[in-house]
Structures are given as C-alpha cells and as structure tokens.
Amino acid sequence: MKAKTLFDKVWDAHVVEHVEGGPNILYIDKHLIHEVTSPQAFSGLNARGLKVFRPERTIATPDHNVPTVNQDLPIVDMESRTQVETLKANCEKNQIEMYGLNHPNNGIVHVVGPELGHTQPGMTLVCGDSHTSTHGAFGAVAFGIGTSEVEMVFATQCIMQSKPKKMRITIDGELAKGVSAKDLTLYVIAQLGTGGATGYFVEYAGSAVRSLSMEGRMTVCNMSIEMGARGGMIAPDETTFEYVKGRMHAPKGEAWEQALEKWKTLKTDEGAVFDKEYTFRAEDIEPMITYGTNPGMGMGITASVPALADIQASELPSFKKSLAYMDYEFGRKILGKKVDYVFIGSCTNGRIEDLRAFAALVKGRQKADSITAWIVPGSKKVEKQAIEEGLVEILEEAGFELRQPGCSACLAMNEDKVPAGKYCVSTSNRNFEGRQGPGSRTLLASPLTAAAAAITGVITDPREFL
Image (cartoon, rainbow, N blue to C red; front, side, top):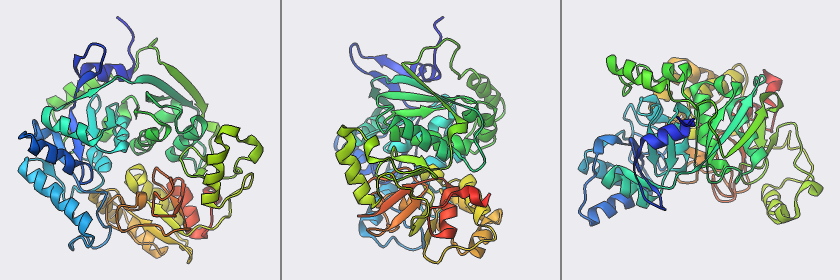
C-alpha cells in the first residue's frame, strides 16, 4: 500500500468524483459563513429556486462588520447593520444555526468553530474567508473559497477543486523564552516570502510544532495563507484530542471512542513523498516584527531593515515603495521607533491564551499615555473566560479596556480603524497598505511584542520584561 501524507488521507476520503483531466468533486463536512461573503451566495441560490442542501452542516456568525462596543445597541453604520441583518434573515429562512450579536456563542468564525467543537480532525471545512486555514491545526483540510463557491456548497454540500501540491515545513528544536507561535510563523513567512507556498497545502511538523498548544497551532495554520499556501495543517495528537474532548459539538460516549480511533490514524505515513520540503531550527527564531507592507517583510526585532545592496533589482521598486509608505529607512533598526496604536485580537491572536500572554506582561505596569489600545476577544466565550480569570482586572489596572468580540482592527470594515500615518503594532495577519484604515501603518507581531509596545510607546523587545 502506497504511503500517504496526512493531507492525502483527508482529501482522498472526501473525493466524491474525479473529473477526468479536471478537478475533484470534494464533499464538505462543515461550512462556516459570516455576513460579508454569504449575501451574494444566498441571492444566487434564491434566483435559481434552490434551497440549502444540508443546513445542519452550516454555522453562521457575524464578525467582520460588528462594532466592539455597545453591541446591545443597533449598529450605527447602515451598511454594516444591513449585512448583519441580511445574514440573520437568510439563516432563519434556511434553518441555519446562527450565533448573533450577544449570543453566548458569538465571535469570529475561526475562533467559534474550534471552541464549540465544530472543528474536528479529518474534516473538510470551507468558508468564504481566506483564513479558514486556521482549522487545519486540528488535522483538517480547511481552506477559503469565493462567493460562487459558497453558493455551490449551499446547493450541493460539495465543491469542485483541483488537488494542490504538498509541502512539509519542519521546525525542530525548542522555542526560546519570549518566542511564540506567532513569531514562528512570521519567521517562516519571512524566509519563504509571500509566494513561497503558492499552489501547495502545507503540513507543519517537527518538535517545535508539536510543543505548541492548540491556540498556537491555530495561529501557525491561520498564517499559512500569507505565504500563498492553499492551507496549512498539523497532525492531530494528544494535545488535539484533549482540546476537542467535551466541547459542545464534539462526539460523546461511544461515538467519541470511535472518532478517537479514527483520528489516531491521521498522520503522514513513513516514506510518504512531498512535492517540496523545508526545515528550520527553532533556536534561530527571536521575537519577530514586520517593517513593510506584506507579511513576508518581517525580521527579528533586534535586526535591521535590509540594506539597499541586499535587495534584488527586480524587487527594488516595490521595496522602496513599501519603505516610503512605512517611512522607514534601508539598513536601520526600528527598535525604539514610535508606536501609536496596539491591537490584540483577530482570528490569529484573539484567543484566551493571547489575552493571558498580554495581561501577564502588562501586569503591574501602566499603558503608555501615547498609546491607543484595542484589546478584543475573539468570541463571547473568550470574553467570559477573561473576566472569570481576572484578566480584565489586570488590564484595567494597567490602563487598558477589554472590548467586545469581533474582527475589529484586523481590517478596515468596522469602526476600529487606525488613522492615516499612525503606526499600529498588531497581532492580526495582514499589513497591506490601508489594511487597518486608509494610510495606516501596520507592524505584525505577537501579543508579547504588542504588550511591550503598549507600555513603552515604542517598538520594544518583549524579552526585556520577561
């Protein structure tokens, strides 16, 4: 029997039919939707007189457009309110479970899915959102899809997809103190570039990856898309099983034992072949920060922006444009540079572990007067846990405020926008021009690095406080 990769095992088990010379027809176990990409798909369905084929396989939650204060009041922005209300109406019409604002299960779709046990090993999951790759942390094949594909899944519970190539990225060794999963993934993206995994589905392996918590694994898989990958995944193990066990939608009793037996087979066979492999050492990674306008423009926080002579001629025009936008210089350090905003949250770093890390560093210290900080839990459950654990008290004593769940300042689609020209150390996933607001300047980093900036007002190595 031919040795298979983890990806092959999950993908092949879901192929309904192979189109000769074309794509696979792939069955989808779970369809996640939110208010931004679903309205057009529902409209297309209605125009064709079709119903959602398997509504019980779909879950919905508004997240992109929602405000992160006063969620008990009507949404002020009319476009945002319309999108959220449209999602509610479509879900009611099609008998789709929806976690609306103030529902105890509401939150960012890629935080809600795992914490409620919707996300399980060996599944196929899709969502009209690029960061669906987050769910691959459980050994699932999860990827973002377009609006027409959302409509296809509504109508058939299947999708037509060409099978991607396979890549394995192995990170062995032990991460140093102050170095997190976010630093690990920013390091890999800096090494491979934003197109380094284009056309591939990535499996992350190695002792440094296995040592990560589920929250950390989700952060790594979430960022896979930022190096061009179709998705990322990590083989499930005891850490995975322990996380899933007992969650609302996880199997129970005998069904759990049967699922567990199956999940334990979800690993790459010895001798399985990948189309491309990379290996990195955990010891080479320090706290990371981006200095440019794509996630591949990252470096160790004590390093310098690349010198002019180190940039390839073909990349020089875009590199110059990027540095001009950020108002940084070739060959210079950005350590100590002014910061105006700090954002903790998003589907990358809005989980309880991220809030704990931030709170641990700011405890007993004070927020810099010059800093505007948005501390945004990824879900109502994370918000509740932060209150119960006393994290809110720590934050408030340090001058911070916990906001309400939502995508918030990850993208300029709600009220939490960074003003033009201002610098924001952000724990989100993208630092494109205008991503956090027209003219805003984004520096991607871990919750610890963001916390260090929040109390100093400048880019700071978090290890100084550990």
